[in-house]
Amino acid sequence: MARKAGSHADITGPAIRDAALRLFARSGYAAVSMRQIAAEVGVGAGALYLYTPDKQTLLFDLMHDHMTALLAAWDATVPVKGVALRLEQFVAFHIDFHIDRPDAVFLAYMELRNLTPKNFAAIETLRRAYEDRLETVLAEGQETGAFAIEDTRVTTMALIAMLAGIHVWYRDGGRLSRTRIQTLYRDLVRRTVSP
Amino acid sequence: MARKAGSHADITGPAIRDAALRLFARSGYAAVSMRQIAAEVGVGAGALYLYTPDKQTLLFDLMHDHMTALLAAWDATVPVKGVALRLEQFVAFHIDFHIDRPDAVFLAYMELRNLTPKNFAAIETLRRAYEDRLETVLAEGQETGAFAIEDTRVTTMALIAMLAGIHVWYRDGGRLSRTRIQTLYRDLVRRTVSP
DNA sequence: AATTGAAATGAACGCTTGTTCATATACAAG
DNA sequence: CTTGTATATGAACAAGCGTTCATTTCAATT
Image (tube, chains in turn brown, cyan, orange, blue):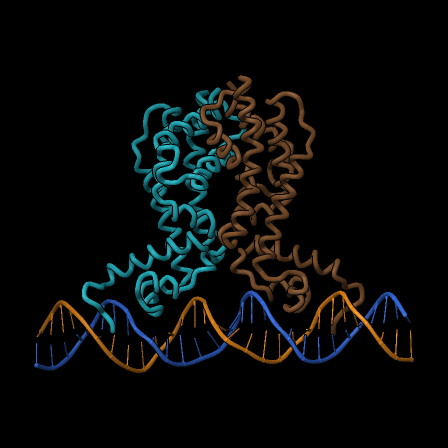
């Protein structure tokens, strides 16, 4: 039996991506089979290939779309005046964006080594671009004397890692609210760069 | 042909673990086959099962031994006087220990989800114990007034993540020497906790 | 009512997987 | 020189892998 009522491409396509994202994040790309993804969607394995040329492209598209959306969202923020406030804006933005997408964050940080070299390079470029957004803010603050930073690149990586680490322990409905976390990390970051 | 001259258990055993560690770190547990590990050692696939009951145990033992060695090494340090210096000691220790074991660090941070529930719980306990070592230092400094920390647990996680992030970008013979990195991170950490 | 075409099936393909086991080898002890 | 044992082989097993494709189903268009 095929083509049940109401089951069309614009439903199945996103459903496949959702299921793949969830399963890849939970068990890892290599450990998840196309048949598992298909079963989660409620479809035969062959149907997946109506929506993606192969498994590798499915992974790449998920990571690529996440990174692209991340950069677009930051670039769409309205910059506040003053580099110190701009840095606080970055922290709040980062936490907001990432806390709502735990699975995509997991993918982007854990599945790089399962990308083909060409796909890996593409994602690395995007990741580097995001790091550069932060580094730009830090460098500007350093120039104007608003910050006192010993090594801009190292501080960038340290802050990104600090923020990325939230996804390791954050749980919805846990001890700390999102606002509280943003406050705490805003202060941690401020201490790290202030003169 | 079996049992070549000089090829004994005390050579093959460690060789298997070395190869497994390297391959698991490079490609991920699920993506590495027992035959690949065996080939790297220069042995048939069946021979692996003279040294490990199964693939899962091989992974677990690698992670378990790493975490155990980490805790033992820290507990073996001679505590310096003064909680601020003790924190600096932790930073230097952490960087020293981890920078020499990039593959084991990769495993311990990336392959948790490929552990069976029981094995996962065991590793989580060890990881938590390591975090607690740092938290203890922070809490003591907070009590004595040497540090000014808003939330001890969050700061612990933030600092661990910051330090763990080094392995993402550090390359042997890169721009920064190990000592330089230790100095930079010592200062970053100090700023984060100082009153 | 007939036709079209997108959407899905499910069998089949050649390969790889983790693991087992009967068999073979090479060294150490008697 | 014979025997015993630790070490390794490599074929075999059932299961699962990603992917392809001839075929079927169903809704919309004519």
